[in-house]
Image (cartoon, rainbow, N blue to C red; front, side, top):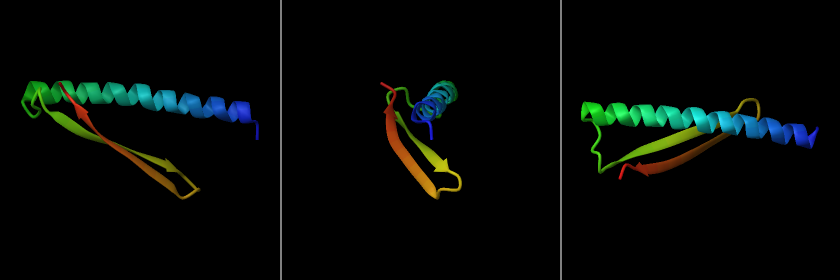
Amino acid sequence: MNEDEFNMQVRKFLKEVGVTSQREIEKAVREGLESGKLDPNGSVKASVLLKLDGLGVEHTVETTIKLS
């Protein structure tokens, strides 16, 4: 295995996950605020599931994002 190439591929994947996830969170929160589903002083729970097919890995990251 080429460690440098592997590292680059993992970083590329994580960058894509981060950028697209941020866009989706921002869009959903804006829509939630506009529709009244979210309190502007509240928070929203978020989670991400990382799966590595064929390796039996499932890792969940959970957090609460405060809106103010």
